[in-house]
Length: 198
Image (cartoon, rainbow, N blue to C red; front, side):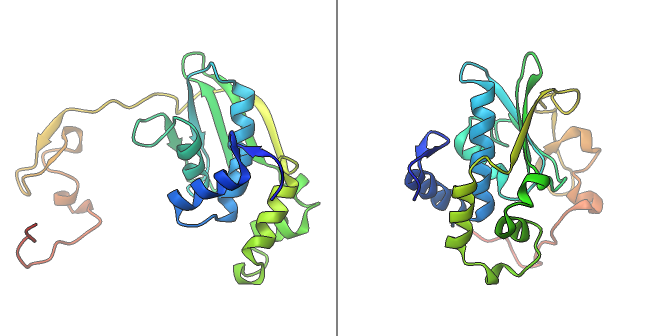
């Protein structure tokens, strides 16, 4: 492994944390480490930053692992845009930095370009080869710019709670007279058998 740090950790410790959290060191996590590392360097350590992540794949895990921003605390927003980009910004001033995977720069790295653009099956490129290519490239295929956040910066506070008259569960009262699941918008269908006891 290369003699460097990523997100303030040695490469070995960085990989160890990725595996512990995500289950394995997916190439997108490793690449994401460089985006988050650079965004943190740009914004500085004295700023209370929020994050906007522009993909649902890999990058949100890196942000949650190596910054204080998580989905649970509301400091991270995740957009399903499938752009490999992250913005860290000062939550009071709404200024910060966006770092992204720059395809123009990535084209000069065929192994990484072909992997990222899914131009060959994942099985055709061993994980260690991709890891080495990403570690060698470092910040090379990335770009960054200063930004001012104009939308999506508000933090959502917990809303008024109601009890659904149909299922008896608590839900956000703004959903209507019944919870969304009981309105037919749920993602599951409960088994007709009795409830499972602990």
